[in-house]
Length: 269
Image 1 (spheres, one colour):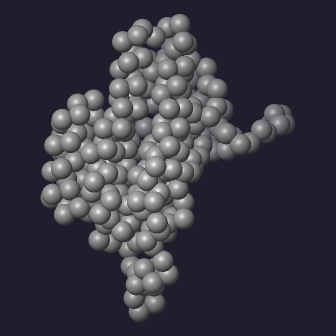
Image 2 (spheres, helix red, strand yellow):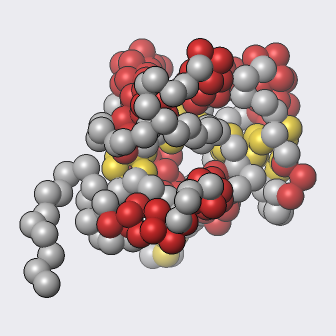
Image 3 (cartoon, one colour):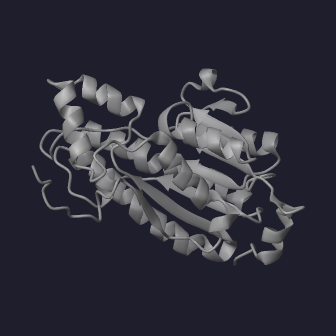
């Protein structure tokens, strides 16, 4: 059931000037204290939303964002935090499932415990947050869930077996949830960033034998020749979360510098 129509759009324009498109909407971003999550939370707030951030350490979350401590691997903690957010904000319209962790190595190199840990955070963390938020989203006229997935879900990347498997599950989960909840008026989409210039990637590069060479290799595999910025990913998330995307659901939006779809000839020397 699509609850957004031209009357809603027109109501958001006054005296010929557009009103901030997320004005009056309530948003929650997991893993929102740094990187893509923080960039997203800030952008949603700049566009008029009242934004809450869930993070293991929300102490440094800047105003006007509201910080709440939560570990997405703890179901009771997630439910308590989501209930507190919905109470404080008087509802929920947007949930961005961004919290996640990385993993490096082939299928032979990860232990069972490592596989369980990554899936617990990257997949089950989204499940826990989503199911805690769904009762509130059902009451919204502009309900949207956006999952932060990865180009690793659709491209075979070396040394990323565990991480890719978890993100492939996230993309499949997105499609299944979109089908399950479309008649409740809840849209579900995901963004698939390429390698983004975030603190996590910085830490990964620091662990490489030659950080400069590793950064150059990551840049070279993206046709634009550079890493994706956190702000570029945030802009895609904000679009999918907005009533402007009212007809968009079950979609994976790549923000990858052309990595997934382009096959360039070698550059001429």
